[in-house]
Each structure stands twice: as C-alpha cells, then as structure tokens.
Length: 305
Image (tube, rainbow, N blue to C red):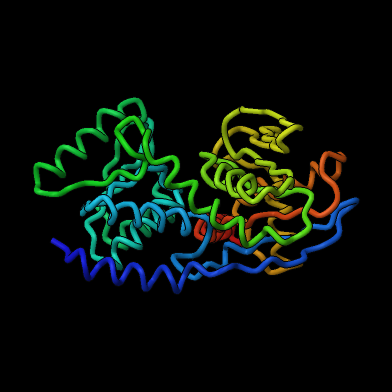
C-alpha cells in the first residue's frame, strides 16, 4: 500500500515542474493563412502531449477523492494510458489498464508496450463487454482492499467529463492574448476541444475552435458560437491513414523537425491544410500539437523511414 501523503507531495512537485506554459511558434505561411503551432508535445513528461495535462487532472481528482488504485481504459495506441501508467509508476500507485479488442489477431502497440514497461497490470477485454468488465475490475480491486479510481467515472464511462476538460480550460490562458482567427486540433473523445471551448468562453474570446476528427462521423458547424467539427478526413477510421497524410507528416518533419503521428496529429494537420486550400480556414491559425511521439516512432520503424 502506497503512502498517500508522500505520494501527494511527490505529485505536486512533478506537476509544478511539468505543467509550465508551452511555446507558440510560427510555422509557415500557407495560401491565405499564417500557421502557428502550440507545442504541447514539448511538455516534459512521458513523451509530452495533451494527455499529460489531462492525466494530471485525473490524478489530482484521485487524491482529492482519497482513492488508491488507478484504472485506465483505452486502445493499445492510447496516449492517455501511457501517461497514466507512467505517473502511477513514479508515485508508486497500483495501476491497471483495460484495453478493448475485437476477436482475432491483436497487435501490441508502442504505447501499450510502455504501459507494461511502467509496471501497469494489463487486462484485455472485449469491446462488447466493456461496462461489465469495468464493473468487475472495480469490484475486484475493492475485494483486494483498494479504493479504486476509474479515469472515466463510473462503469458506463460517465462522471469525470469535467475533470478532463479542466486541463484545457486552464491551458487556454496560454493562448488568450494571441491574435488567432482559428484554433485547430485533432478531436478524438473531445476532452481537449471541450476544455478549450470552456476556457475560451470564460475568457470572453471569440476565436473559432475547429476539431478535426480522427475517428467517428460527427459533423457540425456553429457559426454563432464559433465552433466546428469535421469528419472529412477520418478516412477508413481510427488509426487508418493514406499516403497523402504520410507525405504531409514527412514534410513537416523534414522542414521543421516537428514530429506528427499518423493516428492523431498527422491526420489533423493534413485536414487543416486541406481546409486552408479549400478556403474554409484563413487568417492566423493555431494548431495544437497534442503529442503522440511513441505512435510516430512506431510508424517510422514499421515503414523503415
């Protein structure tokens, strides 16, 4: 059993060192747009990325609720799982990661490999039994004398939405005084985008926030509230990408030494460029680099690039 007081002091020390404002850099002029990039990939913890900010909010909530066992959930490629497992290792908090899968051949991705390296217990579950098996995992932890914390709230995945949104509600203050017409980012579960919207609205900003989906087909455009989401670049789905996206990733790497991954940031960056080409986006545009270096590294290795 870990010492909660010692763990919390260590958590606060790490949090203060890690959660510092990340730079905003001018990238290039492209058609009728000036592209800037917010380098959350430079957050100095567990390969960086937006999930660092989000994980620290979940961990803060775990301590506030007097929990002592962390349960994460996500695909084998999940960036959040990686950061959760890493932080639990550093704080000596028991950690279990649930990874959904379909029947058939299963590929262990780099982020899952890192979770295992960080000492997390991995449990493979069926996609159509998630609720049942989350409940089972929570009950088993209680039976073993723990007070478990599930990152998504209850077994239905409800209850912690606002916790996750807090991360980018706070981060918006790092953007507030910049003159941007649009903020663009990859949208998966929507935690980062919803946090930015809430931060923007609380600060009275009018910047348009555009989410570029990396999976799912949900499109909307709210011109009154300056919010839009496009699924135009989802392609064949999560983790699926075409040669044009790959080419875009390599061009950004070769020109700017910035690493985008094909599942999240690379797909979103490519979509943003296409939106600019088609006149949907123009002016000063900020792209949020939400990290994903292990996915990029894995892709480069598999491609032999």
